[in-house]
Image (cartoon, rainbow, N blue to C red; front, side):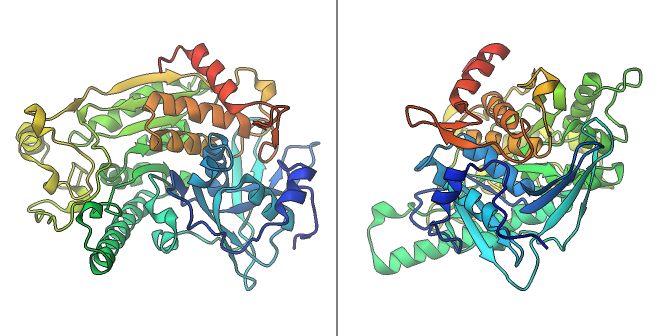
Length: 468
């Protein structure tokens, strides 16, 4: 059992600890937050990291997909206003170290702490197989998985972007649950306003909007047996982000160059092309995280993702006829007639309108006399750190990348600029064991590991030649 009095937590300075310890740890008051840009359904985990000898292990390390993705969003959200637009859930067991509570409080995010003295905090063991990034993971205490229902009763449910790490089937379940809960909340809010106030000008103030969905496939189920389930989940999401090995796993390969043993750029591109081609009726984006190679962005052409628009009061949806709503935009089925599918594609895109779009992802621009088409994208963006000596521990780098990417998309950035945010966010996460240290420079501005995030982003954007 962990020693709760241990102040040694990576990423926290003594001054941060003293300041944060004065704050409460039970259900922070987040109801005054005007809006949440980013929320993660990733789990909170306290890590033990065991390295190859002779390096000693690290214990009581803030970890888990939830922690690192929240970090990624927080890096681009200075306190105090923007930091509160980052939401996540922290499940604390009886063994939860006070130093980690203080560290999280020091970030000033919209963290929801849930303390349960009847259980242990979810803990995990990370063991590196060799000197590469390849490692094994196992839970050492029972895990506590989050559901969409855990967001109810808080502003987190109405986040602009939602990050999840799960299997394809669970991805479908979570998206449907989130949308159902958001629509129900919008109806209840509308009914309450109608009862208390007849001001018609405010009808859409709390109306339903669809969040951006960022899906990170869980590694263990990135297999050829799950490929069909993956294609059935893709119509419901906006960004699918496996790493190179996870994407290759769906295709039955390892993603490595057989001659060099390094990450194969050609395999990443080919696997993306095959997966995009399998979904002719869906527009979504693949962002493949490929370690030292950087990231590869691939988006198929198709109808443009609609802008966030509140649900109008009293508007009814047409019934979906002939196609299951969960696979409405082209998820492949074992009995799919591919010839009929392609033959009906053009007519399908011409005839559909928003009321036939059960998940509200696309925009038929009738005012322009037709459907706005996304031309797609294929582009590599290099990793921030090109010097391997700068990478101390890659644990959590991918999750942090997606936190930066997600909050960028929530704030209206393009996918390429969002990937730049993600690359810079990941660079801070992998420079040390645990999370980077938050501080302030001589002008009172936030710095992480002694550097301003915006300065690092500016240099990266210039280096990769990104036009923003």
